[in-house]
Image 1 (cartoon, rainbow, N blue to C red):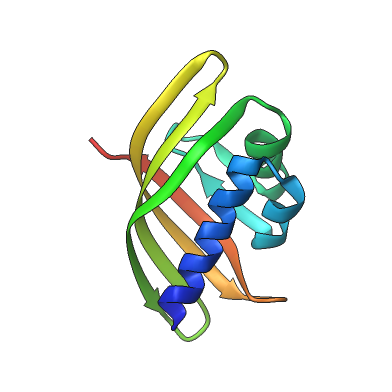
Image 2 (image 1 turned 45 degrees about the horizontal axis):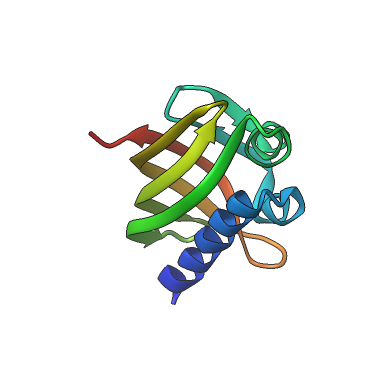
Amino acid sequence: MVHEEIRAVLTAKADALVRRSATDLERLLDPGFLYVNAGGRVFDRDDYVATYCSSGRVVFRRQKIVELLVRKFPAFVVASMVVDDAFEVGDRAVEQRFRSLCVFHRGEPGWLWASGQTSRVD
């Protein structure tokens, strides 16, 4: 059950990124959100939403979960996944697989993404 709930949050996150819906994405992120992207840049919630939804600097065309492993702990959930991404950075198109590790906790109205880190898959 938790596996399906986390997959649903990740699917909603991918959908919000592709639609560039800052409002929908923000609802999925904990206020104390902390993320490190594959380039090593650190984001808080506002930076993440601005960079990936509002600014137009990065425009997602696709984000598809290829593999998902979920582990439940008493107070949180950790998810490891491989994602197939397609996005544009300026005039450069990127299609690549990435591995992400994400931490979720139960909030209102459901699971919130609290933290994560992404790396390239070679």
